[in-house]
Image 1 (cartoon, helix red, strand yellow):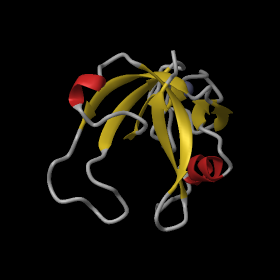
Image 2 (cartoon, rainbow, N blue to C red; image 1 turned 135 degrees about the horizontal axis):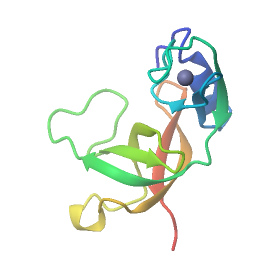
Image 3 (tube, rainbow, N blue to C red; image 1 turned 30 degrees about the vertical axis):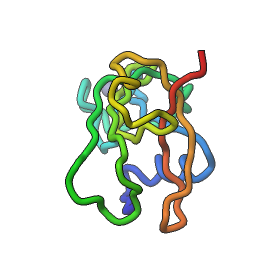
Length: 129
Ligand SMILES: [Zn+2]
């Protein structure tokens, strides 16, 4: 994972097992992906806040083309809507890749997995009901 000044906090958090969201110090809006300026009020002042890690599956896709290095095929790319309202692209794990087991709005929670290059990555799995 290549990080810059705007998102290094995010990946440092993932390495510690925390999912951090950026929030605006002026209007308190949460935003993701991280960026230097608040899209709502234009403020450059920001801080971070730990997300609960709970959310729902908003959308997903199973790529069927060649698998990139570091991924086991098949894998599920998921757009997660966190309960804080921010959306995050991640991977959905712990489910049968049989598409009938996956549905939009299913409850998911964050977990952290080791990538093949030694870095930690976030992923989401279904919440046990
Ligand atoms: Zn703002």
